Amino acid sequence: MSAVIEPRVEYDVESIRRDFPILKRLARGKHLVYLDNAATTQKPRQVIDRIVRYYSEENSNVHRGVHYLSELATVEYENARGYVQRFINARDVKEIVFTRGTTESINLVAQTWGRKNVGAGDEILISAIEHHSNIVPWQMLCAEKNATLRIVPVADNGELLIDEYERMLNPRVKLVAVGHGSNALGTINPIKRMIAAAHANGSLVLIDGAQGVPHMRVDVQDHGSDFYAFSGHKVYGPTGVGVLYGREALLDAMPPWQGGGDMILSVSFEKTTYNALPYKFEAGTPNIAGVIGLAAALEYVSSIGLDAIAAYEHELLVYATNRLREIEGLRIIGTAREKAAVISFVLEGVHPHDIGTILDQEGIAVRTGHHCAQPVMLRYNIPATGRASFGLYNTKEEADVLVAGLRKVIEVFR
Ligand code: PMP
Image 1 (cartoon, rainbow, N blue to C red):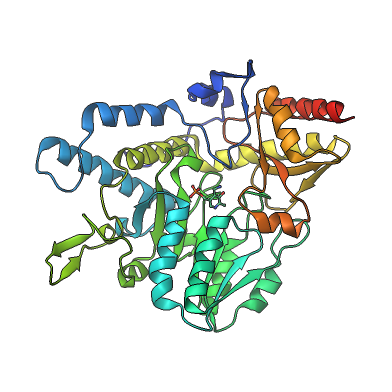
Image 2 (cartoon, rainbow, N blue to C red):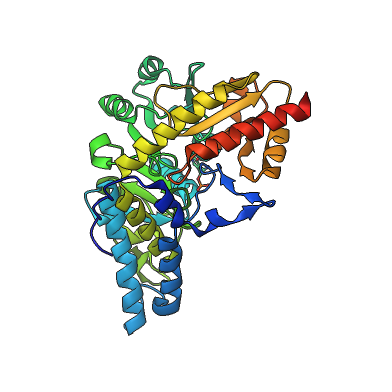
């Protein structure tokens, strides 16, 4: 894998769209308008081709063989790790652990660091707008250890109450676990400030970056998180692969999680010694094609430029928000000042599932439901929302199609 590529000079969305074969297809006989990017993103030809090339020309198991293909696969796998390290500006490749995704990365920290370091009476702080995968692993840990899970409240506009958060920090707080961005509301949290406050309190911080990495430049040294988790499939890469970044000293002191091949140096029935970082946390044959495909995806977004993507998506967010506000009876849930291009909404008198079904007939893919964030729905006293989430290939015209589709929904229920 080459070094981090220089971004394209100009944001040419039509040329970007041509990189994504699926965007050409029809859905229910209509042009596909894919606005479910917070759930998963589509894959560019560059990623698809890289995976095909891996299986066509390079497939072998890693780390174990002396033969040509095994060496080749190992080099590509480890080069991918190097690419991820540079992409998020980690200090060392040892700090990059490959997992199945954000969910597994968070569970790994809860089950290893958490089990070792959290005890009775300790506190873990999460926020009111977390995805279930940044709630449940901590609930499980707290139940096991008699620790307390505390929830940073959220304002009506979807912003966390940061003053309240700072007041909640006390010597019992061992860990703060918050999302970089909310998949349900779009809120981008002020993680640098939150991390600094936690560190001043002596607490560690895990950032759920599932909705961070796809939308903005992430520099783990700059924002200072102790752990940062993200998924390949949300950043135009394959499913089944993700990353846990952890500071080396922390990962080093953590016990392994899953046992098996590759995570050991030697095994006997009397005593097993564990492998060095990061292999200590990568038991069994990894998702080699997935890891290589993930690096191709990160290379792809780098070639467009993370700042350019963030600026373009912000333009889409502003445009789509204004257009949606023209619709009478539509209420946007989540109007934080810092937002990713995720728009959750409810329509007076229409159940969100009906919105989704009718839009689907128009070829428009939006998500409806609780978005794996049921506490968020409870907080706003709604059963579910419709959610349009934009990616780097979406256009203003597609926002217009969404608005026209919603007008049809209103017609049906009039
Ligand atoms: N956190 C957030 C904010 C998410 O949006 C998601 C996926 N919707 C996850 C965690 C879980 O990611 P995965 O299912 O890829 O593990």
